[in-house]
Image (cartoon, rainbow, N blue to C red):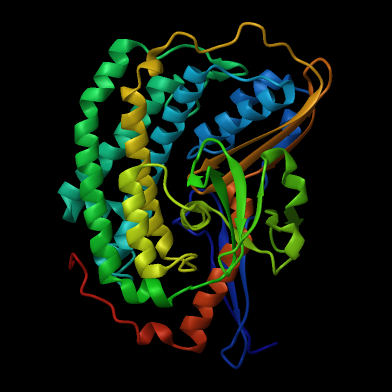
Length: 438
């Protein structure tokens, strides 16, 4: 219509990737459509076809510079599932140490660099101020603890994965090399400072949530299904069953990764190259689900570590279970940081972490079909490979965190747009004075 208005944000800058936002308003001021546009694709599934399976864990980390380690581990797990390979226990512990280090680093980056500027300086501050550079300038102590957490996680990834960004050490049947005792000892010395910075981050996050509780509980409160890994009901980012929760909080499915095609539906929208993944039995769009931190905290009965579990209970007292509050994803992210820190400490203190029995010597290719699932920081990540008798990949299917989240992103953006443009709700919010006035 001639009087319709289109608001276009291209690119969306607070995004670890590439995307754009389109909001279409009618002449009556009603929100007609909200789209999250992904205008490119990278064809990694086709890159993998014709390659030996053992090369996949070295190729797929290049999919994402933020989440190379989850791709590395989902890939090697898919290969092992196809070849019926079980790695030694010490290798699994090293992989857990690797993915928890990445979880810690990535969540620290996200909270401090992508989320904190809006809360520290206020959502209506000039965009030139609402960025990580301003945090460095006005809150140097906070910036230092953020950098130290990110550095701790990334450097631990380098120690275990051989590279901080694109790891190479997970191989079908285990890990290329063990963790040396002197390396373990050096990291144990750094744990107390890491835990101190985690505690400071938790206090900052609590302060922010309490200050902006009106925003958390009123803006983009979007009921959806939720998906995440659980291990005996506890939140697990390396292994377990996939659990799906409906908007009312009922667990509607819990299944082994190999059975995912019974539950994953795929919708291809006309406005994006990124497919929308949803809960197949409910159909689309009714079955739209979300992954990521809050989704995992919703589907899990409890956290796997004591301090994180106490933090989860505290969050649930405020936002309930399931929580549909999009801004509570930040809160859940901090809870997962606590669990990552506790896991890292526990694993480094485990004598088996320096065992030299970290790889099998008799791994042989064979025809098969394997699925590997881990939790990337932004959500559930799935690799599915099919190979011939020589171990050559004949088909690959990758479902990344973004695919699980995009339909939910659009739904929550629609709720937020209606709140702003139709209800003028942003004018009624109780906003605190910024932590820092510029």
